[in-house]
Image 1: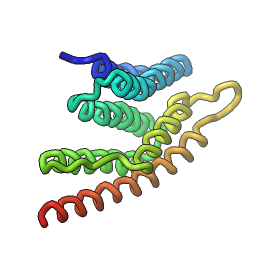
Image 2: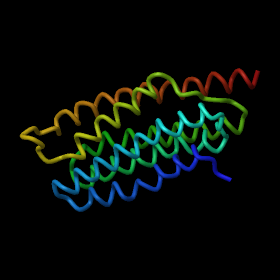
Image 3: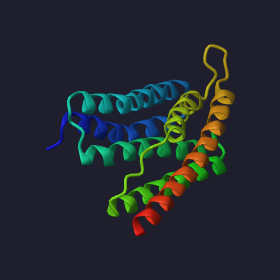
Image 4: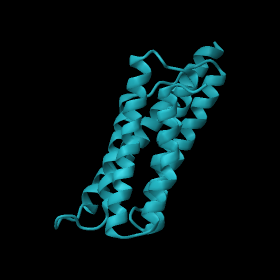
Length: 182
């Protein structure tokens, strides 16, 4: 049985196709709707964690689904940006590869009884990715402002944090598996 926090996490995953579909139908109004849907989906990340901790509903399923939902939402939108030529492919490839590597390391670590906790760089990376996606998703000038440059700058900063936090995960994985091996 899914608790409320896990249902909210699943909602984030289920909203991903809606955001991508709205981006596919280019135009100012669909970009605004896609951005609003993305913001709502991103806020569920805060809501599910808050509810899980406050109501003592933290579950193994939630610990697995929550970061997966973040990766599905963010990577799907970034890949769509590449298709639309709104973000550089090389940046998105590095970010997506980092997410795959970290997810793989976490899965192996869990199997070994090791917890690879998110570090401050990884958390900052996620926040910056969200803040980069919003102006990139708006795409069209809004109130006379072209927000694309802001989105790209934030995306490049998120890329640096993705590489740093990815390296930290690799180091922590190596250190913990060596320690466990004795």
